[in-house]
Length: 295
Image (cartoon, rainbow, N blue to C red; front, top):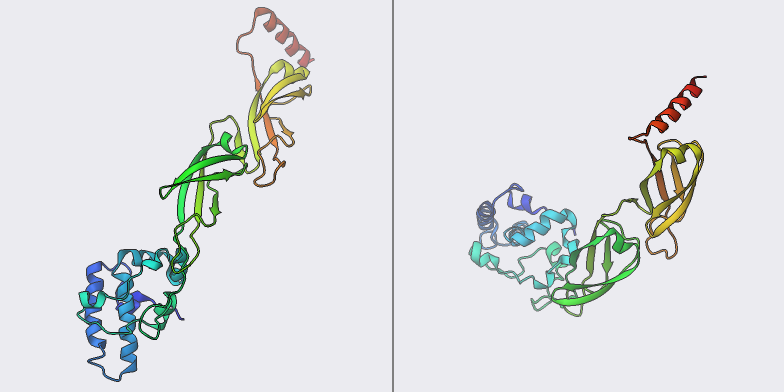
């Protein structure tokens, strides 16, 4: 069915207030009411559109979904609480009119239509989806672990795969609300908010960190101990290493999501420490070195 712009149907702006929508509906409903337009198919069609437009826009929740999903609003969040949609009853409250069959084909196809006897068909609807945010530390998602969540009064134990990223959302099927008319349960959507209290910066599966290097080791070379996310390792420093030099430790990064045994890389950037306090002997030696550099 073709999409119907309910604001155009009621001839109001999208920013119209509830009072303005109510006033517009009453005015147009009187104009196109079947009693005033007998045997006029066009008036009958417009009257049906007016009723469904009013049914949606005069209810804050319905209007919110319509404004959010636009042309595809009927599919938004599996109609959310479509099973709770009440049968048409707004006309007698707002316009003083009550007629059978006051919904267009578009509206009826959305909510399952009407049976020959005038009642709704028992169309199955998926249950409402639930969503929640789970706050974790970066260390928590370095390994796969289990957590217990309380969703809608029920305790649910879930497995969190290693490598989950900040802002990532996962879906767990069937942990949402109950369906109606034998429809399936809704789903649970979990959004992860991951805080980083470590010295490492994460970029997808790779980790980055700075490592202090004393001047003498940078000049002469040597062996140092460096921290990784899961422990310490020994590094060999080449003689003449420059400040800002970056080294890659393959496979020492973060776990790859849902790929057991696969890891990103760790990139360490050397930050050379310049001695601030020198003994007289050290000053003499540096002076001698400086003179040798000028020769």
